[in-house]
Length: 289
Image (tube, rainbow, N blue to C red):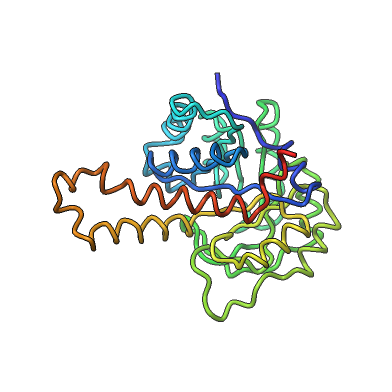
């Protein structure tokens, strides 16, 4: 029996309550432990998500689901946990549904809109009878994610309304956000378009490319209806810096310092600290009141 929740209610409550939940990408055992530990320490729901690439690296969607499920039990995690597919294509969304994910994103933004709409309807029809939530995307998130490249076009309000009408649970919209590290000439989020979309649909909105957006811009986006914020790059940078520092201090040359458990420990701690900081940024604990 899965211990996961689908997350729709907590996202709806977040949008109404003026706060957001972070969705944190995992890449392996250490990443997953750090995300779950951070959520448990803060007393907020944990949204653990895998991209298609991470799932392939980790051995498949079923392995990812079993890993998260096993850690929830062994770590005595008592906060609600959502197991989410991030940026899945049509086949990946179907595979994750079959593998026991509790939430899936079908990302059809690179398809002609009518095809995106039709396939989103298909995924909703497959997922909802199983109690699985669905996220869809309108417009393009800038940067590159698992080979899908977007220039960051603004989402169409009319297309957002049509996608929301399919019954999806969350809507990711392009509002000038990008994946990866933000360039120096980035113009910032387009709050006018975000406001227009938020006024047009009641669906909880998702901000992709959450890593690197200044805190004040993120909090303004939350005020305008964003209820889910994806974080990945920031965790990777924190991990890399911590492991680099371990080697720079020659700790690997100490007795058994080359033990991978010792090498990976500071990176894991850095991820947990990053996630805990983002929980504070997003106001996720407001949902406990």
